[in-house]
Length: 336
Image (cartoon, rainbow, N blue to C red; front, side):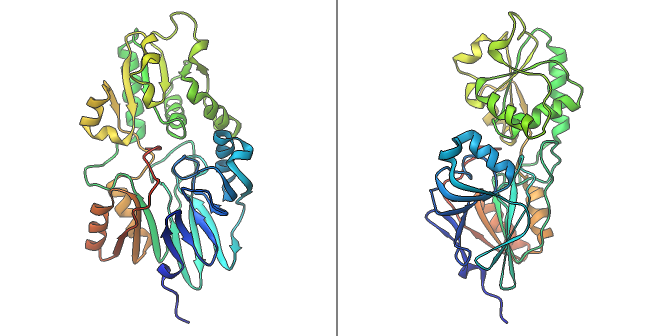
């Protein structure tokens, strides 16, 4: 029996990537009847779907962010490989953040893997990436340019701790994305031996508490308002990137402004944000990791969903594979 061309049964629509025989969308950016969600970042996990299939951690994150009733009509926590309207559906770890998964689809002899966001580097707060051989690999390309080569996260955490030691009277104000990057940086710093309290902007408190409930120990973390007078001098304070230079940050003692992001590889971005200590820590693959993963899947066809599509599609062609830019709308750089 001839296997069907993937384009005949999985394809982009105005609401997102749609699996026609399974009658479900993957990470749709508008409310749909049935959605399979790769992970909890807001550009992939939107509220309002009638039915959601996802990992148990992603479901907990969605409920935390959106509230139980607003998050979805019903949730189904993935437990084992299943069949949905004749399509085999398996979730495999993506290594991006806690609960992140690749969506593996098997139909009539063809295997499609939709990566969602993913990384190959170690992360103590989530399960590692699982390579899945396939016929069609649908990949992100957030850092899909040759200039992007991330530093080892442990090295960057060490740079932060060295700066804390060298500047004992200055608050270190670290900009982090609230889901994934915040908790990863806390655990990396703890593993490097930092046992002092870490102070949190209010926007980070809820998700850190959720991580603790899901079994990720963060140590002594405290909301900034709980700090004793003078306690923030020489302390580490974490906040969302938007708070680095707003009025909230003015209460800090001569702060060293830091930012943990793959975008800190671009010096101009660090200068624009007034970042004194840029830390190149990303929860996405860099250029070499993207190419390695594409090669290792063995897929003859690669679709690029979002990010820097053109350069990656060009490189895929040079690798002897067929590349296609899907240009799906609605995806942002929330978790970089």
